[in-house]
Image (cartoon, chains in turn brown, red):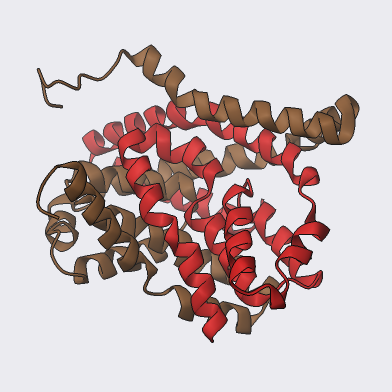
Length: 185
Length: 160
């Protein structure tokens, strides 16, 4: 943390409340849309129907957060920074996208790893390439969901159309960060 | 619980056990990290799961599949990207929707734009994970960098 810098983090409580603003807002919209569509009883039924899903999710999120924390404490930060953090050329972006695509376990593992890479001072372009590789090219999701449900032709066309996008997103991110920092475009 | 969940639980237990055997300090650090992350995301994850359950029946799948048919071209790609960006929930929510839309006659390139937007932009995931863990400055730039991707994927798929 940059002590004495202009952007001192707000107190803990205010920060955690700010974090909840978007979920609370979206939930309010969801409740309003659901009541308008299905009435109060339908909304209550849908909310109760989500109960078992929450139980499964608690196990999944708990296990994934523990696994991510274990990965985080063993992650070779210095090596990751050297490998992905140079901020030059498209090879680090390609590698970051590749690492993202084989990261298994959903957002509960990918985001803690992303935070660990950020803490290891991997540059923002590679962070976005990692996140894009994980979201667009996730091997786990293709095997479990896309191939069985949508068929091989769909998968192949989609992969052909998307394989370069982590690099594209990383390059856009680098340009945005440079502009925000007021450096040369 | 499916096979992936069970594998995840086993991997987490194995990881913790190995860490406990090799390095107690790292274990303490890992538990502290897991605790902090749980406090950061748990309320948001619960809220977003409920929101997804409430919104799913509201999404008019038949209307959407009409708008993104194979003849809808570039406009359909844009509509698909827009719809995909606001589909809430994980793959157990989005893939059934995509299957319904595929069955109802949506075009392949348009569905690719939709699925790409769901995975790359995913407002529910921004709310539940990205904002609490990475902060607003990163999220703002990341979203701008990701906005063109679903459209690029859809347009590339139109060419194939």
